[in-house]
Image (cartoon, rainbow, N blue to C red; front, side, top):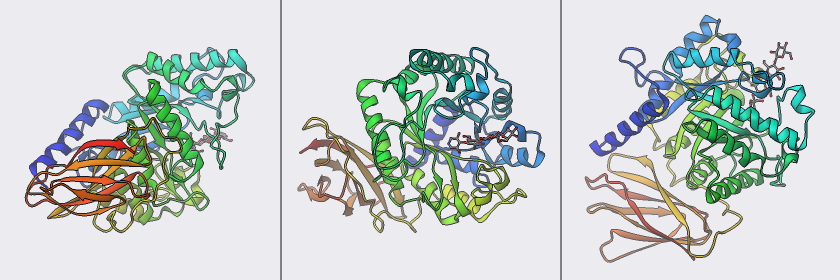
Amino acid sequence: MGPRARTAIGFAAAALLAATGAAFLPGTASAGTTLGASATEKGRYFGTAVAASRLSDGAYTTILNREFNSVTPENEMKIDATEPQQGQFSYGAAEQIVNHARSRGMSVRGHTLAWHSQQPGWMQNMSGSALRQAMLNHVTQVATHFRGQIVTWDVVNEAFADGSSGARRDSNLQRTGNDWIEAAFRAARAADPGAKLCYNDYNTDNWTQAKTQAVYNMVRDFKSRGVPIDCVGFQSHFNNDSPYVSNYRTTLSSFAALGVDVQVTELDIQGASATTYRSVVEDCLAVARCNGITVWGIRDSDSWRASQTPLLFNSSGQKKAAYDAVLAALNNGTTPTNPPTTTPPTTTPPPTDPPSGSCTATLQDSTRWGDRFNSQVTVSGASSWTVVVSVTPPQKVSATWNGSPSWDGSGNVMTMRSNGSGNVFGFTTMANGNWTRPVVQSCTAS
Ligand code: G3I
């Protein structure tokens, strides 16, 4: 690793620490031996869902405190927990988790301010403008109460329908008007301007599915209209009916290219395949704006799907093969065992194109070897495009994929045109001793 790359990683880690307030003191955790410390070395966090009722279980807290540097209250910040009676707020269990985490340097992800599910009875029975006001008041009160203690809020959870419709999920909140989501984000921003604000959902992992595209279009619309959204959470509950797919990395990078952070927020995998866990980690590490992974529980016995044994620790608290795979992936970064050259992502262009002439191209670091490195460029805003990328002499581009390249006379400026392979292209650069990151010079829609 060159000094520039080391500096970049160090800076990213320092920035994350500054943002999260997390601190890793010498002797408290060793880089390379725990999930949290290893993720931090890559400028990410590694978190888990936590249940307040388990904090009295010593075996549970031993693993929590050793391995994780971010926590998400599993149920304690939901609407039924925090506002059981209208206007009467109850924060005890949530504060127990927040205090446990923050006193140990862990950051907290707030989950969730507005959701069709786990509503208290009084809210379930409301509709129309009264419900809209009650929802906004809930967002304001809870975000204000925890202001300064929550790094990221899941502001709205699971607002899109499953299946092929690409429609919003029907719910009492949706029936208050299509703008309920943006109204919730604006209320959250006003209440806690320092928190990152996320939209969070499941079955949004597969880039080709209608639900994924629908959320993508909403985020693109929000960004274009200035609705305050900072990030998108991918729950990533993988199972036999909803398996991990190889275009997951394309999904993460495509959303990131909209100008939001992306996070894996509720990861569990039926059967806990070590290979699949490793792929998820490698996909996140390959996307610069994928800044954290949270697993949805610690031991299998803590899981909402315990019978699927989907987590990293068995019910006795022992590390499973999946744990070893995750730790190795965090320590190695993206590995040459899964280079993009052998698995080019398949993509579907965004359904709607913006005005002719405008597009955005975002370059991300990918696999790195001793003499060369891969880069991935994600184009948003056009399905037909021309992107100009330059490399620094004596670097030379030695391979490309998912586009039609041409070069200027110097061989240092590559013009890549879309060739129907989607909106993510990649290339390999021979470093020749220079590890400077290539630069996107322009993106033109055609
Ligand atoms: O605490 C009570 C207990 O007193 C009672 O005896 C028991 C009997 O029903 O219920 C217990 O509460 C349960 C609670 O989990 C705590 O264990 C609820 O019934 C149960 O519905 C609740 O399930 C939670 C589920 O959300 C509800 O939607 C899961 O723990 C939680 O893991 C799950 O988390 C969601 C995310 O928020 C959003 N994404 C999907 C994810 C999985 O469904």
